[in-house]
Length: 295
Image 1 (cartoon, rainbow, N blue to C red):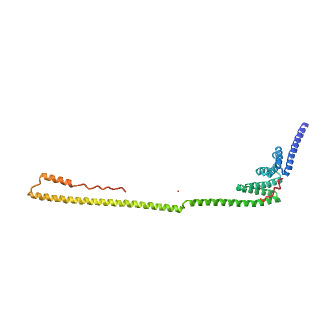
Image 2: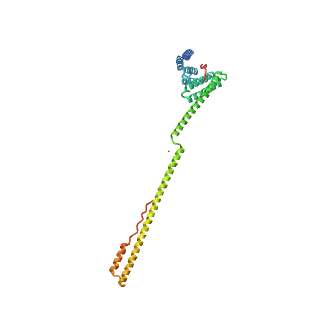
Image 3: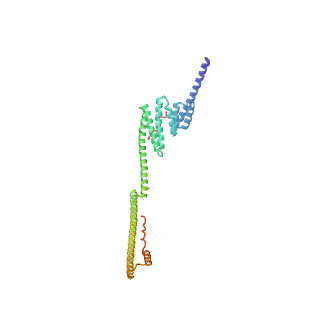
């Protein structure tokens, strides 16, 4: 029994010693923080965290040191871990300082990343509202809330103006491009002129073809007429020849035509008879105040 009591005593002594050591680190860190030596104070808080990694108070102090150094992402991490505390006062201070940190972070992004800055200020307002909900008498949180709200409105107007300028620039570029290219009406007119020209050419071609056909038909008719005249002339010659033959036959006292003469007349008739000509047919495109509640 004495041995158990002795072990418990040693354990309590060790815990007391560790707590005393951790308290000493935090005390040194607080002193350095008040002197403005934020880097040294942060080192002391880190030593304390090694002894108690889950202490909301030490995380809060770490967040405050990072905030003073302008290391806002690390500060946010410290303050968010402080929110795990059951102490409502500490939670309220953590929300308040988170509001300050999100505002400061947003200001660093205003010039080059305005949309990111706007989102950060919106988070800042949310943290101030939570701080006020835990302590309705927190005038500092209320003051900062109103200030950041106006800053947020200013940034949103600035962002809208930026978008308008970008749109105007884009519209101007499109207008310039349109001026370099023929308008749709001009393009349509040009296309219509081309179609008319094509139709006109087609008509000319058709007229030429029809004219050629008429000429061919006329030539054919003339050829037919010539052939008919030739045939008529041949017929007349044949008739005269026959008449002369008949007269000659009469002179021979009605004697019958000899076989030799009949053969000669037949050969003469066959030589004078000619075939008709063959027709050739041709195909047809914030003022934000300095942080006053770091503790």
